[in-house]
Length: 200
Image 1 (cartoon, rainbow, N blue to C red):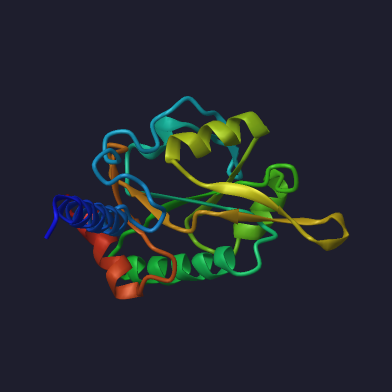
Image 2: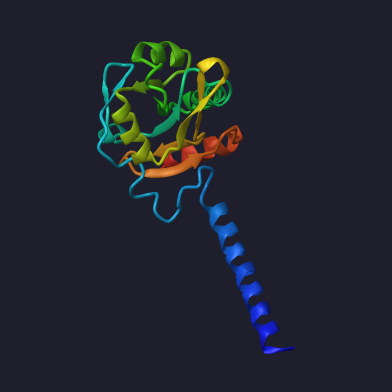
């Protein structure tokens, strides 16, 4: 084998190794591609002030004091958001049998259409869920703090929908990120995560 062929072989093995590293990183990164090595201490931490449907203010301090979950979505969502709210209703029913409850905040990524009143009607059927809205700059600040992806997708006729992250983010009583629950993750696995967090 010539020296040139050896170099090509080494280069190819290097590419294979880099590809394997990338695949492993993406698997560890979680459902929304967030860096698992840099999440727990900073997720949810930031300067944002939004209005909740119960009249309270949603800030960093809201995450403290009890078991909390945060989910970003919008009221015109065709599938992900109503499905997730249905999952939350299932969790709350099971937790109620334990004498527990999860405080869930549904933060809109579409504040132009999702007023506080609109959100209040949208989440009213699910126990323990509070809607959150506010000015676009504060929504963007919250998205950055929670590392949430969302973008507007144009539809025919001038309308639009939103593409967005689909995980429910769990926070412990100290306001520290605990673990995500993936979209349509089975109820047994989701409840196991919630109960494990509550038991800490």
